[in-house]
Image 1 (spheres, rainbow, N blue to C red):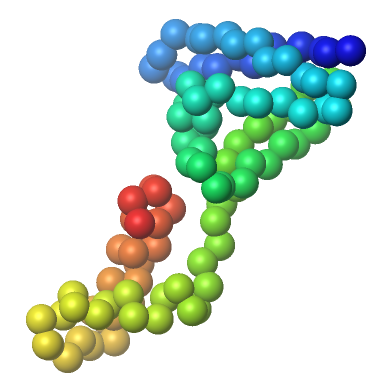
Image 2 (cartoon, rainbow, N blue to C red; image 1 turned 90 degrees about the vertical axis):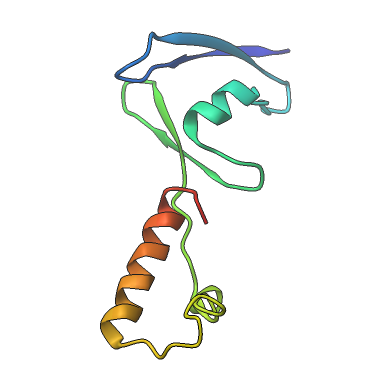
Length: 105
């Protein structure tokens, strides 16, 4: 037995698009590339599904959490041999965090 789920994709500046997904008997769903791109989800990333009280669900990309291990060495080859001040290091960390949050890192 298979079930269908209809997903409505919308963005404030775009027309609404609708796609229908099929749920297998094992309860699995394959999201089309268009849906994943719309949500900003890349291969290997996780998604979060929130069940809402009115029978709807909200699907979004989970926020990746960095680790100190990933932070180590991120300034390597970026200082041209200069010694950085604490403020410059803080600014570089903020820039790297913003880039990672925007999916640029």
